[in-house]
Image (cartoon, rainbow, N blue to C red):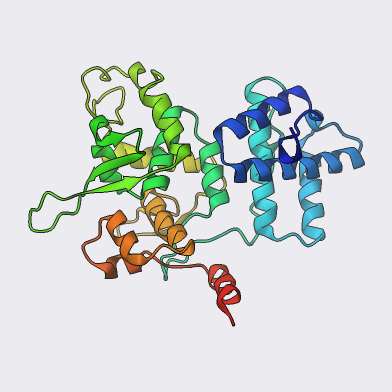
Length: 319
């Protein structure tokens, strides 16, 4: 192995972690994880520590040094999330006594992405999505997040997906459109890539779904211990539970009834689906069909961009 795949110089438990990332995550995640670990190891060596003996104070010092050197707050946060995922893996496997990130405070990084409640900018960037995937504790939760991210389906549509709706060979799903016009029974086809395909096969063919009580009698993709079909409300709870295990979740406002409104919800994934495909050049008419919108103006409302996106776009398209 060479380049970002050269794991031999790392301690064995970190090698195992990187091999797992290579097998189960995107090349983007693997590259970021290796770069972060390389920078972290250099800092540890300079301060006389081993990477398997790090403590909270050492991590705080590293974060402070990056801030002093001029790293953007968002870059520091992404590196912190990457390193925290490594130590969480090591701690879960008793390779380290505890996760030194358990008591690391990150709120001082002031440029953490915020939701603009006035313009309804509600999407996740790729690093944030990968952070959420790392926070999943079982395959079902990972399946839910990957399904919402990869297909842009509404949470009610995700709850309604049946196993027969899924074509594993063609990597596509027939979705019953939940917002129907004049009683029409509409459906649409959505498509997905390898990351979701791998998890779907493990869930359906690897026996993981069969561990649930109603698996034998249920036609639905998602189920719970109490129900042959996962309720929409439970889907939303799972997304918020995963987000709560990261530093990404936050209450952005309180509604008129006094209920907190979180930044990350299932609908955040739908907005993310729309924004990232548009940024990659997808014509909005295709996006409209994939999202199941009857009016293109509805699709346009999903396309709220952050100021840094607009700035980068201006640089790209300027003559």
